[in-house]
Image (cartoon, rainbow, N blue to C red):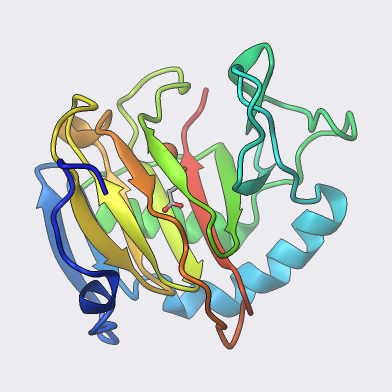
Length: 224
Ligand code: SIN
Ligand code: FE2
C-alpha cells in the first residue's frame, strides 16, 4: 500500500455489495452507477464469446518490455494496443491482421445510456477495450490519454469478481480513492475528471457464478 491510498482493509471495502441501482459521485465529472449494467449482462456475455473466438485474450507488452498481467482484447472500429513501439489505437488486431470484431449493439446502448446518466449526452463510442483479471492481476495508476480528444467520457463496466478501483486526481501523486466495484457496476469519468489517474488493486482470488475465477472490465471510449 502506498501512502496516498486510504488505509482500510479489503474485507471492509467489500462488505456491502449494492443490489439496487444508485449513483455515487467520486469527484466532479466522475460517478459510479451501481448495478447499471445488470440488464445487459446476458447480451454482454453472449457477445463476448463471439468476440474472443475471433480476437482471443492476450498479454500485451509495454513499451518498457514488461508483459501486462491483465489479459486484453478489443471490439469496435478501433482497439487499444501496446507493444515495444508504444501505446496506440489500431483498426486491425495485430495478432490476426483482421479488423477488430465490431462493437455489439448492447455495448453501445449500455455505454450511451451510462454516459447520459452521468451527464454526458451524445456519447458515440468507437472503441471497447476488454480486460480480463485473474487472481493477483493489477493495473497500475495511469491516465487514458491515447484518444484523439478528451471531450468524450470513458465508460467502464465491471463484470464478475469484485475489485478495488483506485480513482486519483489529475496528478499521479494525488491521493487515490479506493472504490469497490462489483458485477454490474459502471464508472463514468469525463469533463474535469477525464484525465484523472486510475488503476486496479491486485484482484483477490474468488469464484463468481458467471465468470468463475475472473473479473472482466469493458472500457468504452471515443478513440478517433
Ligand atoms: C482501465 O483503466 O482500462 C480499466 C479499469 C478497470 O478495470 O476497472
Ligand atoms: Fe484506464
